[in-house]
Amino acid sequence: MLIYTLRRLNLLLFTLLALTLLSYWLEVELGTGSTGSLWSGYLHYLHRLLTGDFGVSLHTGRPVVEELRIYFPATMELCLAAIVLAGMIGIPLGTIAALNQGKPVDRFIMGASVLGSSIPVYWLGLLLTLLFSLQLRWLPSSGQLNLLYEIEPVTGFQLLDCWLSHSPDRLNAFIDALQHLCLPAISLALLPLTEVTRLVRNSMADVLRQNYIKAAFSRGWSPAFVILNHGVRNALPPILPQLALQFGAIMTSAFIIEQVFEWPGLGRWLISSIMNRDYVVIQAGLLLVSTLLLVLNITTELVSTLLYPARRKELYGQQD
Image 1 (cartoon, one colour):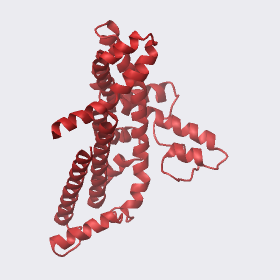
Image 2 (cartoon, one colour; image 1 turned 90 degrees about the vertical axis):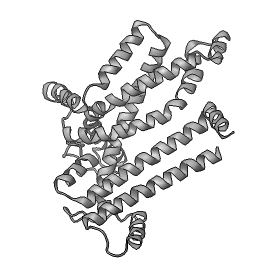
Image 3 (cartoon, helix red, strand yellow; image 1 turned 30 degrees about the vertical axis):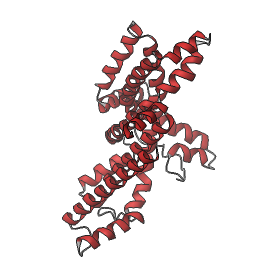
Image 4 (cartoon, one colour; image 1 turned 60 degrees about the vertical axis):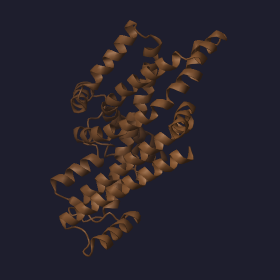
């Protein structure tokens, strides 16, 4: 396990260095970097990144790191909400499908999953806006919080800031922020929901065929106890790395959803920077997103290997 961990960390380090080298080359080509030799300039660029100096926006004149503190938490809040929704719905659906393999329930769930994965997120967002905002008027159609509420940003996560606020309208602001989050989070959660359902169904089907599941049922334990404590517990760790790969798709879809719902996040910020040809902002934003996805994938793979004994046995067998 130690050798495997060191290999993963080395892969992460070299990949990050390659990303920074590519980012520095773009900076040199665009003429926005420092002058001097390539080696000294690259070392200076690495020092700037490590100290949090991503440059100054050519459009607003503000440091990029300050703008990242504003827009990045909003995107993360939206992505985390979508992941939570996908897990809360997808894991039970996948488990139900696995328990009813070949039956109409299984075919219906998997058919709906295939249909859901083919629906464009922007089209779904527009449909939800048309239904719940314009027709029923249940939920707001854009923004992150009503302008009537003045909530001082603390963490950048609107729901958390509303909850931590000392404003007398704290509860009303929290409910309003939750209502603003509903439609974009539901739209964004559809794609990972279909993938979670499919992966959980296949993994759970393999687990249910194992002898220890049959032995647990033979002891007279209730089906719910066996499924929760032996089935789900052993079905989820193998698919964690595959689920982590979905975060990249979620981030990409979030950029589109932010345009549909006018969500003040990283996607709108980057697209606005592209329109204004603000190369410093584009460079910093893409570098941040790439680094986040790399770290998340490596971390999830290490945690899955640590928690899943069968995966560790496979690694030991490969090393032998």
